Length: 196
Length: 289
Image 1 (cartoon, chains in turn cyan, blue):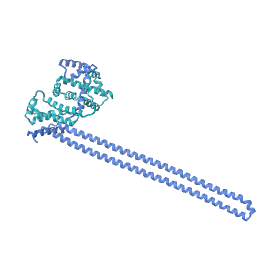
Image 2 (tube, chains in turn green, purple):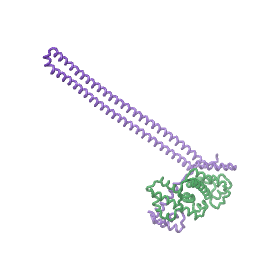
Image 3 (tube, rainbow over the protein chains, first blue to last red):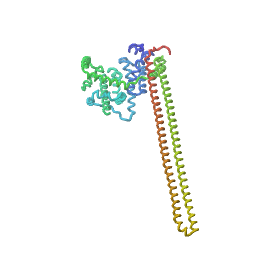
Image 4 (spheres, one colour):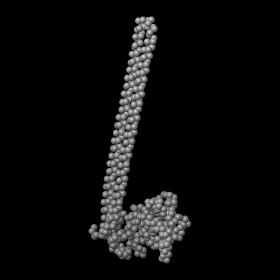
């Protein structure tokens, strides 16, 4: 692993503000993979994911002067890419004619009736491909806001504070969204697995 | 066995999320140590999360990373700012991937050509077998036809001979009539029995001839039928041989198709391996363009 010229975020931000090429090279090397992955997990489309990623880095380049440094640089990057991805998702939803089932209306009571994790994980009779396809399908049924919270927290392993920051919401609101997304996904998996 | 306690589910989730306060975390870990069922439940949730991550993961393709550099450089060029250097590792990755993709494409093309050649050979072999069977069948049919013709000719000859014999016998009755004209009294007494005998003899000859001719025809028929049956059997045998040849050809073609798929898969692995190898190389970026 190569060492980066700017050892901490504060010096990196300062170099970015000065427009130093090396700072942007480091920014790309440090964050491009994660930003792309987040976009891809939200959008499940490589072209859209690339668009959202480019948008995120371009925003940092064009608006670094506005960044006050109160939040982490990574949070800002994730916020931009998430917002861009949500924009694309909303455009897709408006375009689609078929009704997409939103799982965020699942009540807590319904969630309590769900089988436990063991029933949701029938590893002895479902192969990897089918599980992957089901999980992706389940994610697609989440509303954009729940999906974003879930992807950032579960997939990108951001802290709850970073998720809140990226989404521009409070930490407790972020926790609620992640919890609702999990319940909705579990209900989806349970419904589809018991139906087979 | 998973705990069915809903509050345990929340505890597991918060534990894995790092959201348990220190005291609660310590208590949970102590309980975890002594409860195999709880350990299994925690592992299941961890595995599901891992599967979810893998299911939705999308690695940044090196081409996309290059385009990101190019996009930012386009903006920087507009502002007259120094351009970003594209890392040597990224360029090496792209070069290796292009080379691997080219190799893979060439291998797939070669496998495709081989499969096409196999299919052509199989088709030619099937056509040849079919032609040989058809020729054999024609020969057999010709042979059966010839047998029928010869038998019929024999039977005809037999019939004609019998008719000639019978005619000759009837001709002998003239002698009897001459006797009557020479000696009417003697002729009247002897002619009827003589004539009856002659007629009987002619009749017998004709009957024998007809029977013989019929027997010959029957024999010809049997022989022709046997020849035809042999022809039919040969044709069936030829058909089976053609089918087996076609099946062998199809199997060879299918094998060649599977080889193409295997070659394509190996090629794809090469491309991925090329990307991974260049990612792990410890190449420091240089100041060169």
